[in-house]
Length: 222
Image (cartoon, rainbow, N blue to C red):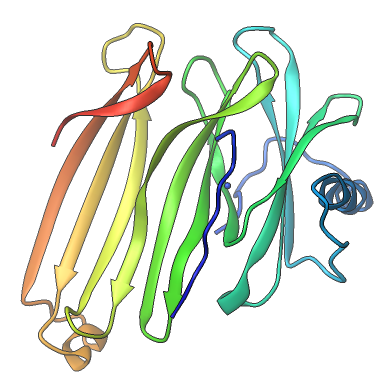
């Protein structure tokens, strides 16, 4: 089993219905610039490149977030780049295990954040993913939420876990809360897993609200 370790100061499968259409050659150029800015040798090829536009609730300006992924499924690698609207690079960082941007979401205002997925651990019959929410604030990206996402194991305790994140302003105060929907199934054997015959299935919901002092989401119920 290999395990991807990552540390990034701000708090990235790929975006469906991208809200910012950028010419493919421009994306390739920006991916190369992001890699160079992060001190990474230019990858020979990229598996995926996606660019989305986020809106800053503080400055009212827009920024473009680029996510580029390369490598094999067992050795996924990636870079995240932040650009202004004129195409000038502001920040970039290498993120081992980066799988890509899931979608654009809203925390403080419409389309101010991205939800992304990172491969945390991988092996034969074993996989754990982590989900992050990055919010644009004062022109930079800030990590405001992190949780375990999809996971499964075909060895020892045999299980599969599916996770879905819902963003909704339940208090009508202009700031979204996060509902983490989890379904975990356990199986008596790999054969039962392949046949989708669990011996136990648990569904639960966890609620997270923004702690304004720490600027991160904290759990408030489950």
